[in-house]
Length: 129
Image (cartoon, rainbow, N blue to C red; front, side):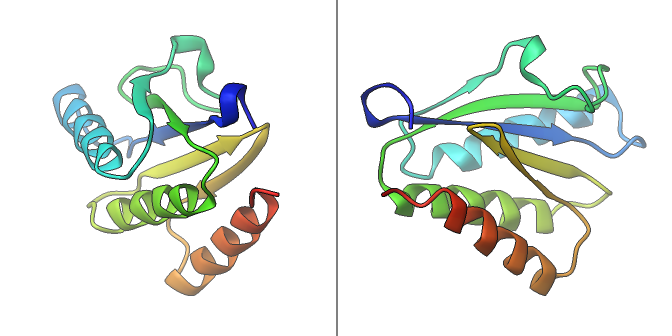
């Protein structure tokens, strides 16, 4: 839990290698807009050094957002569901990672059932006490 009951979630979009810079920018913009519809405190571009070490350094392949959430566990669940739904509607092999307090979950080409199991375990670990 961060300052004043606000938790920061690092959301990183690693796009399919086949897309160009313009398409990538549109993807990041649409992801950010969709996250903005969730009841989050804020969504901002993360500093360039915020992307995980394993992520590609090319700005066309990695986009990072910092999402600030209130202490409400329901907002976190809504964020994860929104990201998962957004990813499922995209064409291409994109991957999104969400990191909270050093714990990371990666969402990509898993089946819906596998993703639900991964997300449930991740959410359980970050449920407000």
